Image 1 (cartoon, one colour):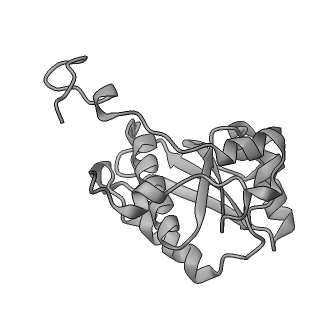
Image 2 (cartoon, one colour):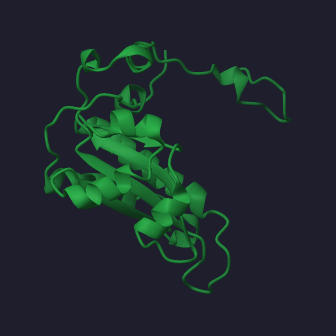
Length: 191
């Protein structure tokens, strides 16, 4: 039996969100979790641009960067966000080849914290990073990596067709011996 932290095991990407707003103190807790992530040279090369539904113009600006399929369900989330990586080290302006990895760690912390708070963060690759860069005025040497819908999960009964089916599928994960090798690539571990 695995002893994985319950927030890690229970984290999932909701497709249906309640209309309940996320207050500022809760949002701050999410970003604090990201802030304490590990990073190469403690560079902390992550940035987040978010907008709440209560700020319609800015919310729609992010929503319009999403692929149409993602817009269809993400528009119910009270907060939308674009995660951005700084591609240069601040100390010497050399390329930071670990920035995207470090941003991923920050997002993992944020997503796990969201589970602690009863929220769900649904991260998406289905967005237009160039549109996000232009519309959100992201500077050169920064790259939009991921879009996210954040909110309190709601009933899948609000969803139709393929979305409902997808949301109700049982969660699954690969077995350890599918991706953990001992000593050499392909040597199945005995864990």
